Image (cartoon, rainbow, N blue to C red; front, side, top):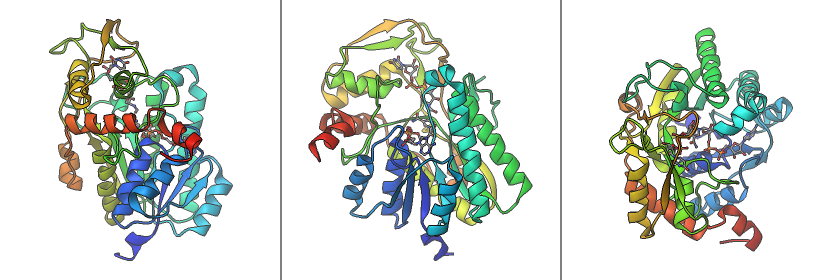
Length: 350
Ligand code: NAD
Ligand code: WQD
C-alpha cells in the first residue's frame, strides 16, 4: 500500500485557484502529481510559482478533460493512482447565460474523464462539488443529508455529476469516490506567490474586497441590507483555501484505503456576514474598504454555513485557519500581485 500511495495523482484543473494550492500540499506530502488543465481560466505561471514554493517540478499537460484520446495517452504514459477533479467552469451568472457550455464542460467533461479512468483501471476519484447543491437551505448549519436542489445551471451541473458518481459507485464496487462540497473558499498561500486571479471583474465577495483595498476598484456594493441575519447582510462559511487543499489530502487517503462513495462538507462551521468580512479585511490590510448598500443580487440566499462534523469523523480533517489568516493571506497575495499572474507573465517574474 505504501508503494501504491506514491503513484502520481492526476490533478485536473490544477493550474486554477484551488487546484494550485492543493498541488502544493500534495507535493509537500511527498506525492508526485501530473496536472491537466486547458488554461481556459488559469495561467501556467501558477504552476511555476508552485515549483518555487515546493522546490519540486510540476509535470503539466495542457489539454481538455473532454478529450478522450488525450486522456488515454496521458493515462498510458503515467502510472496514475488517483484523480482530483477540479476542472470545470464556476461562474453562476455565466452559467445562466450559457447553460450548454456549463453542462458540456462540467457534466460531459466529468463523464469523459470517468470513462477514460475506467478504461485505464484507475478508480480512486475525488470530486470538487459545492455547497451550491443545497440551494436555499431549509436550516443551518447544513448537514450532508440535507435536501439538495440547486437553483442555477452551474449548481445543477455539480448536482448531476454527484448523481452520476453515486450511480457509478453503486454499479461497480471497485470505485472509491470522495464527493467534497466546498463552502466559500478564500485566502491565498501564505507565501504570497499563488492566489485567486479572476480574469474579469470579480463575481465573489473577497476578491472584490481585496481589489477595493488595493485601490483597483473604488468601492464595494453590499448586495442587500435587509436579509434576515444579525446585521442584515448575507452570511456565509468562508474557508481558507489552504485548509480546503488539506481536506483533499485527507479525502485522498480515504479513497486510497476504502472503496465506495462518501460525501462531506468542507467548511469551518462558522458563518460571517458581508460586513464582518469587510471589517476583517480592513483589520488585516490597514486599509479602508469603502462600501455602499445595493439591492439584493438575484439568486442570493440569506445564510449558508456547514456542519463540518462528518468530515472530521470520517477524514480526521477540520479547518484550522480563521478569518484573520484568510484576509491577511489574501491581502499579501493582492499586494504582491496587483495584476494577478498577468503582471509576472509580462515582467518574466515577480
Ligand atoms: P478555477 O477556475 O480557478 O479552476 C478551474 C480550472 O479548471 C482552471 O484552471 C481552468 O483553466 C480549468 N478547466 C476548466 N475547464 C477545463 C477543461 N474542460 N479541461 C481542462 N481544464 C479545465 O476554479 P477554482 O475556484 O479553483 O475551482 C475548482 C473547482 O472547485 C471547480 O470545479 C469549481 O466548480 C469548484 N468549486 C469552486 C468554488 C469556489 O468558490 N471557488 C466553490 C465550490 C466548488
Ligand atoms: C458572498 C456574499 C453576496 C459580492 C458563490 C457561488 C457558489 C460558490 C461560491 C462555486 C453574498 C455578497 C458578493 C459583492 C456582496 N462557488 N456580495 N458584494 O454567492 O455565497 O457563492 O461562490 O461553487 O456556487 O454561488 O459567494 O462571494 O459571491 O458572495 O455583497 O460584490 O457576499 O451577496 O452574501 P456565494 P460570493
